[in-house]
Image 1 (cartoon, rainbow, N blue to C red):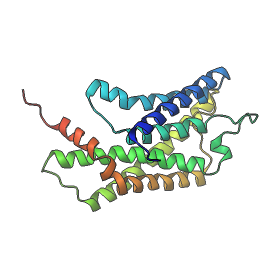
Image 2 (image 1 turned 60 degrees about the vertical axis):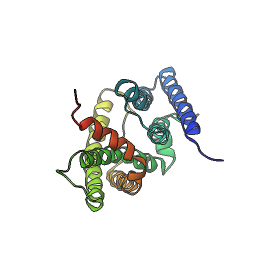
Image 3 (image 1 turned 90 degrees about the vertical axis):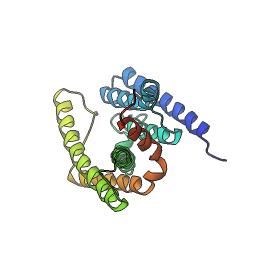
Length: 214
């Protein structure tokens, strides 16, 4: 069965409904961490539609599905398992955090790739050859990964002080190193297939960088 853009759009809607249900479950059971993560994830999945309505900036359905699936994995990962009060997929499934990090980091790397390629297309003053883009994406993602780990740590500390556990959690130095390793996997994924799936986004960015004629 061929996976069409219509099926991708349908799957996006289904995942958004599930994330909304996760948000409601967090409110119902008094889980602030689930509410915050579910709410933020659901909000991020609305951005493609918002950009299209407000700025006529379109993303293909596969890219929107990529964004939505990444947010869904994170939101679902914070949901306590039935009958197990403090055990979530992040804690119960050993690979959940790794897969989620790879997906999320690929989104960040995609932003870096699309922006750099848009500048390359927009002006002849810069030229980013494939080898440069490859190294750039790895360094960009590793720098962002370090910043994210620091934010994750401090947000976790503040949430514990405020008595709101479960927003973001770190599990030690080994977990941090693995997170950075899977961040690199996400960057490698974008470096490999970015030109196929992000060219249209880069072209639209480049067009907006060009001065408009009166």
